[in-house]
Length: 252
Ligand code: ADE
Image 1 (cartoon, helix red, strand yellow):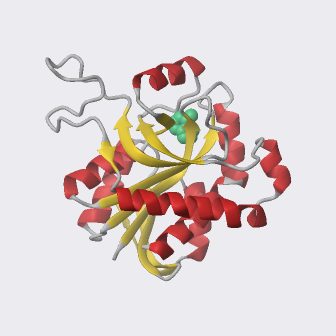
Image 2: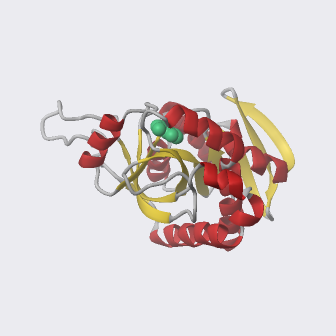
């Protein structure tokens, strides 16, 4: 099995870069794809840069050029409801593009992708289960060994939760309580917002390739979002993504 692993920004995959045994690297469309072995698996690792266009282009290259069978997308996200706290892990059960508005097209719904006639892209249930178990394993057995507990306190992290639910993606960094509340009222089971996952899910759906998108909450998509995401990326996010990916790919 060939696995493509994507994060949007360099910080999100930095610790994975330290682990990969690189066999070759190639730059296509201004992105560098690292092919090699990670935790005993054949993988291609890349950061896409932010947004749905960048993510769609990157995942298409992974599928068309590298022939991956599975795509894992990881990184940080803003909390999508009042229960989600910084440090929680969200595994996407389904993904939606929150900035798609098709209501001007007769008969189309708010988040529907025109012509494809789909709103949500769903993760295959066996992969969802494995991803959830991997995240729980990391949090219960590894997290405290790797992370400075003082740092966890700074973010008020006690024991992070792992939740399965809806991830909404759009070409907007959300830092407005009203905006996130409005999305929450329109999207069922909204757990977090980010800028790439649903684009990756759509491309994987179109090519018939399996995918898992999981995110660590770095902020609450409110007025403090910029500060919190910066701190969380600097000190914490990479440990979560490395730990969960390590566990997940060992189970595949
Ligand atoms: N990624 C992390 N936090 C985010 C936010 N608040 N909005 C969009 N993408 C994010």
